[in-house]
Image 1: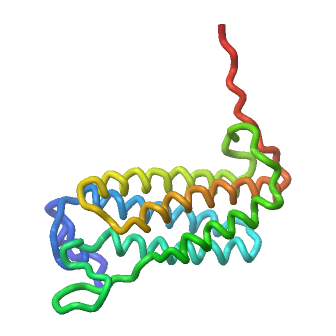
Image 2: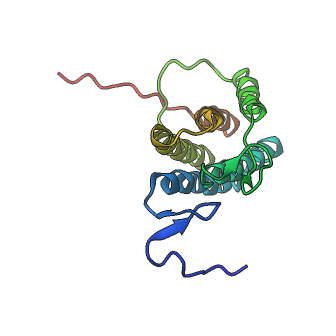
Length: 191
């Protein structure tokens, strides 16, 4: 597979299905941000994590490739079932969302209740998790904007929303695991 095709030299790129759009199109920004998120999660996975956390992150990375494929597919040519002259694409499912929720519920059992917002940081793994979380929120915002103009499968937005929650809870778990203090945000009272 050749890496450079020269077809994008004029500022356009092809969606799955062949439709060409500008590289700054909101659809491209949406799946490009999902791709960036996947890279940040890869960096997080490279930290000193427990095997179960690393395995969960690999599962999430696979789901993000699937989600990216869903976003990169021309909606006019996508189908959920096999059809003539239409593309079959992989899909994110409700079970993928439930897996995130179950993992959060399990982690939350061992975490102290939240009483304040928490400042990101304290350990490289915790910081990497928070960066991934904020990139996930940006991907969600981009995808939400795309959804206003070109309606998407609802599971896409739900997955991104739940994933950002998962990354927040994972950051809290990692703070506990690495024995770093969660620094509470306490607004200063200026008068």
